[in-house]
Image 1 (tube, helix red, strand yellow):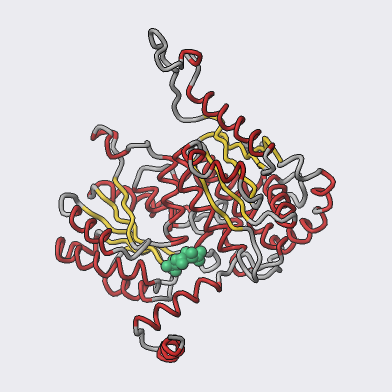
Image 2 (cartoon, rainbow, N blue to C red; image 1 turned 45 degrees about the vertical axis):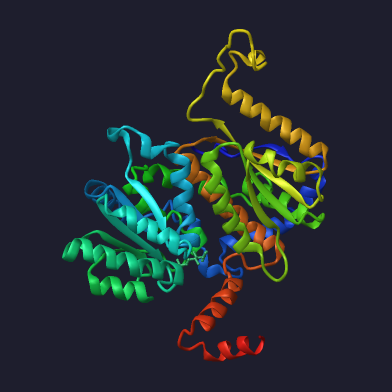
Length: 447
Ligand code: PA5
């Protein structure tokens, strides 16, 4: 694909941001670009994602593909255990790239079913999962970089027990662990039990890890072309390397920064394809965890239009002027339909006869951008060429590069997440985890 820019701006939030304001950002962009590429900024130990795709070792890729084939051959269901960055990227890609109803396809077209666990601690969810697994051949991929996160560890404890009771010694051939190369309880346990393991590189943080084995193993098992995903990201690496506004990732970061400083408190990621729902969830984590620090940052939220135009639409059009929208528009959708004619026009829709559903959905997007911008809500519209592995890989990298720039423009370290620890400390203290006695006392004195 070369240097053709895949993600295009269809609307840059005019008239809310003027070109001269964007140009004033250029010196800051240049400085932040050097921080990223010279690896001299805060959090620079976590820049492994920068060249991950273009430098992915072939031997590792082949091993992931081989494990994926094995899982698909001996299983009906893969349970993927993980949370945050060890969960959302995989979910986003499967949701976008697979058929909308994969489980209802004829057997010869049905992909391996992937279900998720360890992304919450609901006893109802876990009990009901265990209840249905008996009817299927199962493999498990437990994913945790730290190897100590409570949610996936708890889920793995019960699923490991389930697998051992069900498959005996063969359980270890059906359990795959994706974790740190040396540290953490999961690494230790996996080595002891003889599970096949895949390594999350030290210098890639959780929310930047979708193109490591974290995402790639579940994708390979589900029949997703992981080489195309990596190719898209590798091409984005080349395309998004200029230190100025000709780089769309940086232009997007600059727009967000200007809107933030003009008082916008929230960014709503919007799409008109249900397949992008979990990309919205992935974006919320990427931006929320990277930027929400030192009492700064845009609150990332997401919405599925036109569904949510019938719920949140009223607020966006007429409510508090606190947000702007970033709309992800898919240029070439996977499938299209034509509106059928109806004799007598009882529903009054014959004026649409012969039109494509896709053009109607696009018109809804254009009409909404117009309505919202007229109502005082800035809109940035990013066009994604299609819903393929290549484009998704490109899009993952686009947003990773944008958030790195955006975080530095905001004056925060985009690669850490110190705030996530507070709830964990409280939870451990309240659950009585050894080592947390002091905090427990502090909390109980608070009443
Ligand atoms: O981005 C992050 O670092 C986090 O969201 C982690 O991915 C999440 O907390 C899960 O961590 P781990 O993979 O160590 O279990």
